[in-house]
Image (tube, rainbow, N blue to C red):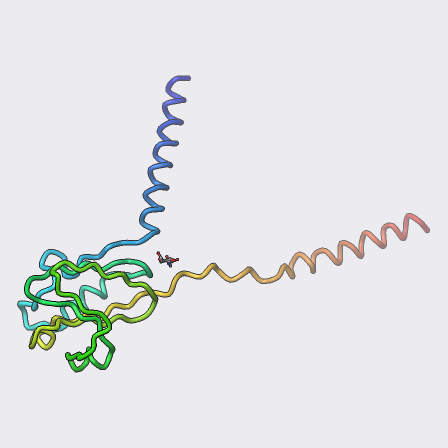
Length: 165
Ligand SMILES: *[C@@H]1O[C@H](CO)[C@@H](O)[C@H](O)[C@H]1NC(C)=O
């Protein structure tokens, strides 16, 4: 009996832990841009380094990006400015060395470094934020049941008809 209760408790505790963990992951995540290296000029000649990093992740609305950098900056810009590696009026500008940026809508976000030459050398990144998951479409109307029901109804009615004749 005692072991039975211990067993139940284990299940309860495990379930509670698991569901709270699940709840937590279902909320929002923080992504460290560039992982250990942070937001820097890529050492290799790979100017798609940050986009490769971004393509390995799935970003949701309200996830945050953490940029760590020294003597540099983070600019949120338009697609055109991203392609030109230049912005005179960025959407957002940060240079405090430790920037947490919230992805507050689905769609594309363009980031570049504001230091001359850094964007050209690969300090740039496009982030695609996924559309929030919509509830699944309602199942198709219950035609099967309706089709099944009517012959039954007809049968019943004819039975009644027979009985009352
Ligand atoms: C994102 O955060 C805002 C404000 O905190 C909230 O109103 C909104 O519902 C959140 N959106 C999602 C998809 O979690």
